[in-house]
Structure formats: structure tokens, C-alpha cells
Image (cartoon, rainbow, N blue to C red; front, side):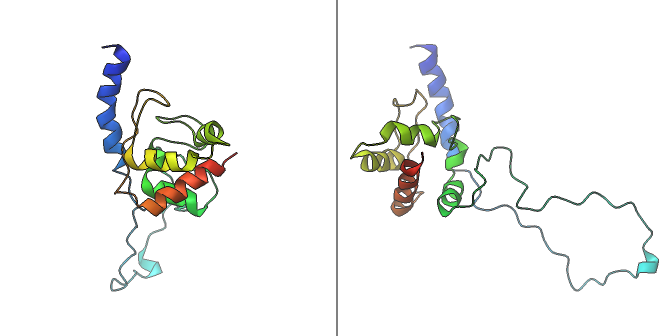
Length: 154
């Protein structure tokens, strides 16, 4: 058994764990309780003002690799955990979606084959690290939407 095979066997469980652990939405910050009255301005000492925090839309986890557009397909990919292993423009753990679109462009059965691959998982086409199965965690219609979007990329 080669080092590559051993590395793939060791990394595979980590990939499986990562793909299922993406939060669906960023944590919501609790609003101050309206029952607690604010102190009068004369009772609050002047304090240096901290730098304003960036809006929540600009704060992204470091592992998130999402293009700036807020398309429905990209939001679905983020919610489904696709960007844990894939990026649109560069290889991460899995191939870049632009590379996938280029490889399968013009093949009549590409969409059907990729739907099965995303749903059931697979390995060997893009390297030794396997893609874990995504069904039933991701609905069949959502997988079809994502595959159609990937194949539409230029």
C-alpha cells in the first residue's frame, strides 16, 4: 500500500465529518432586553469608543470560500456544506467547480452522472480523496440544482 493510499484512508473520515458539520446560518446575537432600563446619560462615565464592528454580512468564517454574489445556488451550496471541500475557482480538498464544468462541458450525460456522484459519493476521478455521499442529507432536487449550476459555470 502506497503512502498516497494510506493518506487517503486517514483523511477520508475527516472529510466525512467536515461535510456534515456546516452550520446552516451564522449565530444570531441576542438583542438587549427591553425590560432593563438604560442608565441616565449623567450616570455613565465617558469611555473611549471602540472601533465599530464590521456588519454581520462581512464577517465570514475563515473556512468559508464563497464568491461575492448572493445567488440562490451559491447560498444553497453554502448551506449544504459544499464549500467545505470545493471552491468555484480553485482546488481545495475537491476540484474547483470551474474545472468540473470544463471537464464535462459538451457531454450529454454529464448532468445525470454528476447528480449520481454527488448523491452517492465517489473517488478516483479527481484524486485519491473520496467525495462522501450527500443524499439523503441534501435533497435530490437541491443536488440537481447544484449540479446544473456547476455545469453552467464558464
